[in-house]
Amino acid sequence: MNILKWTLRILPFFYMSAIWIMSSLPSNHFVELPNSGLDRTIKESLHLIEFAILYVLLVSAFLTRQRPFTASLNVICAVIAGLYGLTDEIHQSFYAYRSASWFDLVKDVTGILVCFYFIRGALFKGRFAKLGKVLGFVKKL
Image (cartoon, rainbow, N blue to C red; front, side, top):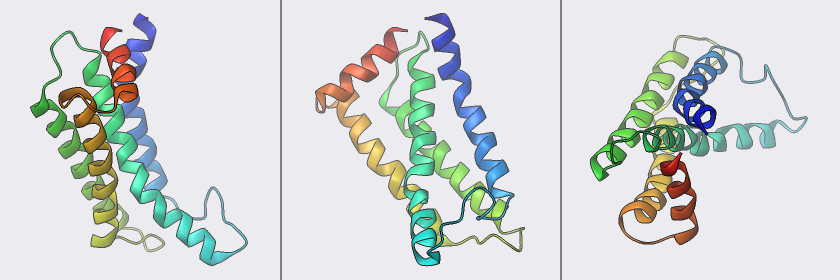
């Protein structure tokens, strides 16, 4: 369990590094679908989940601590993920083959807020019992 706990604690940093590296590369570096419209749609929709995943990883990391996970800490995790989304958009603006936009940032924050709603409900509002069980397991590590 100790290995899993420490993995969850460092995973957000590896994920943030991966985001940084991928933002430095052309959007078609890893994959490009033959249908350019579909390729663009899929890659644009990834904004909705990319930073939501970061938020979930941050929550998981903080849940493994001995200290209680508070509603304030939950908000801090969401803010950190959102600020990293802003940082990513700024970072992309320095590359000619990448684009940065406020709309992309809105998509980033929307994904974070959706996950925030469910995690807040599971941890603090007594909703989403199955999610609460998963988060409770992470807490017990």
